[in-house]
Image (cartoon, rainbow, N blue to C red; front, side, top):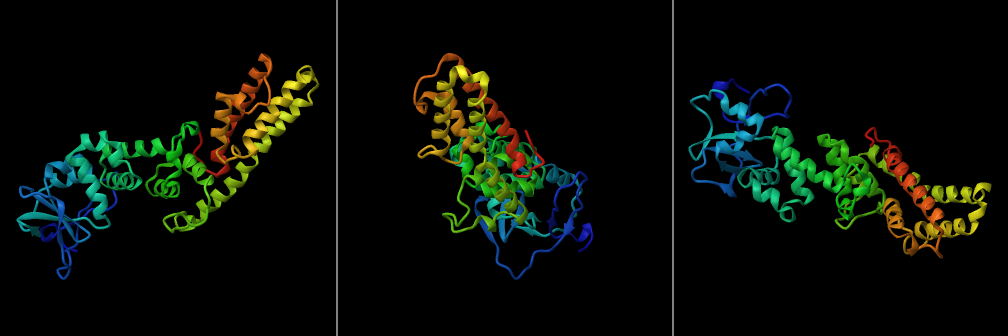
Length: 323
């Protein structure tokens, strides 16, 4: 490692609040390097080296990064390592895939952000978040986190089927890059899935840390008890002397809830979704009509239970972050 005057290329370390020190690390001359097939511009004025791949791009595209903007403001030495007559910057620890995604955003942000069906796969989001966090690209970082929150929202009632895809990877990414907001929904989504070998051949325990795997197992067990909990609450109401005048209705909606929460085809693990469905159309499961007062009371009971469950889920998975 030499002085600034001996600089061959740059290794930018993980961002901190202070301006980074630039480290000298000449690239090995024995390795073969290739030009990126998309981001190699004849009029580019800087070359990034990532995993033995060269990106010849335009310096002004890097100014959205606090790290690069600060680096490019510094006086540059007259003699530097160069490629195709452009200064070379070696980025250690980064991947070609991550930088390809980031450069797509830098060069065509409007298309990147306005066509989510093309660019919102988990891999793309993860790549964008890794680079934008490390090099402090605030707009891309915000976009990436918003995409994660659209999959694993803070409000668990806003979850949809997209939450089930890459839930384990989402947990790992949240831990790596400090996005705790998505953890309750990601854990909840993962708890509803089988924990054996997945379609891609990987096991959950190869993705999650041992601590998070333990949280998942504990949370799953606690969630299994919840349908019984709401049914017990209903049964207690049946035996409340104050409700004897409507005993028939109480039995009807107790049977309806049991059908929805315990019996096939509705007896699935997505308890919140089943309860939301029940509120939208309770008569699908009820064996008979209820009087107006009992129907209103049923809706209040289920709505209260949903609210309490949403607050409890982060605690089931032993998460500090809660709603």
